[in-house]
Image 1 (cartoon, rainbow, N blue to C red):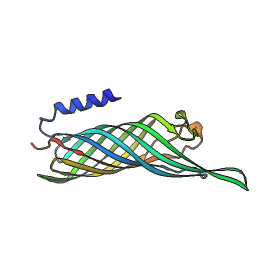
Image 2: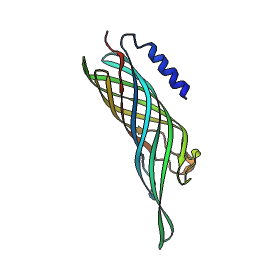
Image 3: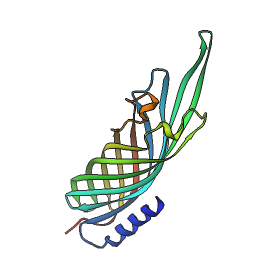
Image 4: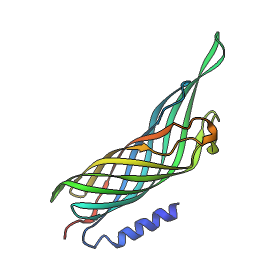
Length: 202
């Protein structure tokens, strides 16, 4: 995984000097929640992180592939009910380590020297490599380990600095079919900051 990320960075770096190519190392935070949660579960997003890089190929319209590595966290609260008089709430935190590949397309709404406002969207694929559960209520095999998503974002470039705010909708079910909750999907809010290397000028 780390080898693949390094290969992407080296490949992109060799093209920095070429026209209409930009390379964007980034770091950011994520907040991931579960849609269609089970009736007996109350869940909320916790702050996670992401680090990686993408490239932009083109000018006004551009192609934006990228690779990222990170960890997402979600807090779960459920009621452990022995009988109507004996109930207790169980709090649990689920952490998932994820390797993400994205294939976006984008457009510069504003394209000026020193300032760019842009939008992008496209599919991404999450590969879950590790699952950590405080209370051992989940196992790695409970989840679909390859997840397809659709994401959209708005970004701004000021000189060589860049920032992007986006949201991702899960397409693949979060849990394996045998787990019994086929409608739940992971959605994610993310914010990244980084630098822009290269140029999109002719």
